[in-house]
Length: 99
Length: 384
Image (cartoon, rainbow over all chains, first blue to last red; front, side):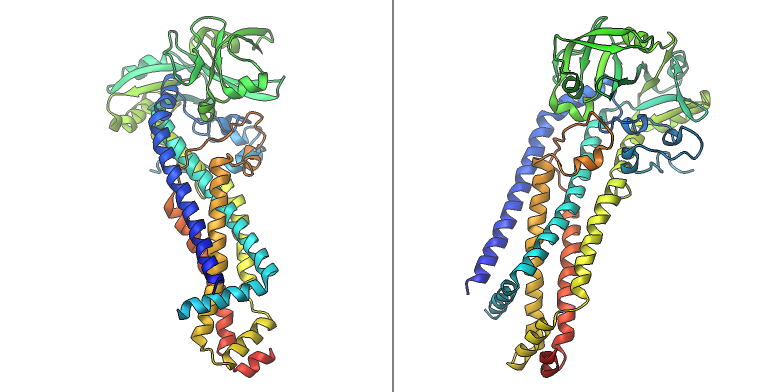
């Protein structure tokens, strides 16, 4: 009768580790929201930023919110867009509310 | 006590086929880790975007000609300012720069004169001609720091030397990694923008509830304009990282299919050895319900351990290691890409969904074929 004890102990250990990580994460979130968020929001406000600096390979991936709808296909009508990040970003179908 | 004894037997049974079960456990945990990593990463990016871009301009007005974004006359600002409810209008000057030296793209952005001090800048923002502040990515790729000179080639193909007066801190990489911030006159001269044109116009609205009405009015006054509201920017980022995005579809669906194959392999039948074992257990007096409980515990032991290991691995991967395994997938051709330092926000609903989507089918696929074997005659079952 030792295996089930070991199994229960292992499960509890793993669950406790996950719980501790999630708890630590929550405390980190509160600390960073209080400490880092206001200065970061100052940057956004001062520089009037509209997008995250994630994908710098093309205009429409650097500023997905500012790109016109044809940008990925700008070379000629129905041209295939060829930047890898373009396939990562979901098409923004609901950018404007439908009438 | 009876349940614990059946659990004990189930664990002994798993240990007897230790290599097979260990392989299943590892593949299962890996699949859950991949699924959870994608969910954790996209949720964290979505949260970060919504928190940061909550301070984005309320309304951006672009000029669109032939379906393309065009430079907007600064004079449009006066027409927009005349619309009731508009508090302030500010032309924005910015553009892209391809740096042949590092093969990276930078975003050049103008800041107004006499800019405020920002805690996220080591040094200060430019406040005179020939000065610039750069993002951590630009600083790294060009190996320049505060006090150094950054040389860029302008639209006339002339090298322009700018003194770096500030570098954005690494904490702001997600916003400023590829930025080169200049004074307005430096930027317009650099790109050769005509004096009366801006890239777009930022509009501040007195009453946030009126943003859509003002956007409609702008569209009416300036028919070839395209107003983009803050809520649309936020919705774009909510959409970029939602389940329809390529990241989710490519990585998530691949992992989900791998898991389906694993579960399918389990569900399509049990080995002759397992059938014989069930037959023997029945012959020595085990009830069908005991056998089902045995298989249930076997399924729970493997799937719960895999789930917990997978979730732990995903959490450490995304929030401690900066999603290093997923980064090459989402990086694309970006030369400058921020290292992730994400807010460890986890959506418990997503964790529950992962648990439900993975544990339930696995346990079911373990129990159902055994139930078929358990209800057959012990002798037939023993004969295979």
